[in-house]
Length: 325
Image 1 (cartoon, rainbow, N blue to C red):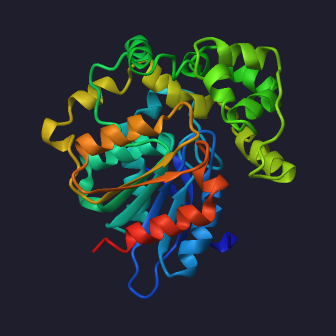
Image 2: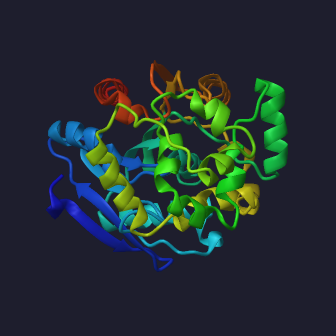
């Protein structure tokens, strides 16, 4: 990516956001890419290259806590509706008022609230791995753990408790290779046994356990990725989890009217068949319930769809974009 296309914006909240921006050509739309944990704009590089070559505009920020963007330590700064407003400030800075949004992981939570509160900006919305998340004004972590056990027979988000704990940042940064090996495993089944269950993520990182590197990136790419993540440290990235764990989004979700829960703009869900936490059947069920104009596609990958199957993702997104007016 051309370094001349990187820009910075200071949002109304006073935070600096770093982002990649290239305007469209030939009347094409602009795509806004929203990454998740523990990624940056760089993890969209295959999509950015593909779609800018076809004339699409791109805005790809490092979200709050990541890359060269501000990384406040106060967890209350990571409320989803506040970060939606930050993203809108970026769009205003580049003078874009209509976008196609493509999101992954925590970016899908952010996209969900963007749809709930500022749908006028959005031409179409693509969710990868994680589906649409409707407002949850009474969200409670323990209740969610119990519900997932009831529905699926086992924990799904046990690692959230560890990521939200006071000592998680220091422990994870100390044993960063151990964290990476469980977050990006060669065998995706390890998530079911050592990330999803309560207590297992802490146990893994404390014991400094390690696995072979995942095949979808080289050791050099992984080292570059770790270095970029550790520039600001893990406090910011973990605060996305902690804000939800501590129910800091509940009051904002309460403010969203019921009619905004249902999404009428065209949506796309790309589910990962080998993702043992963001289960594809759960994502499909929620999207089908709340999204009235939806296309879906299964990818035979783990959670990291755009890294494992970049060409297939690009083709599917291109087909979805072609349906948008």
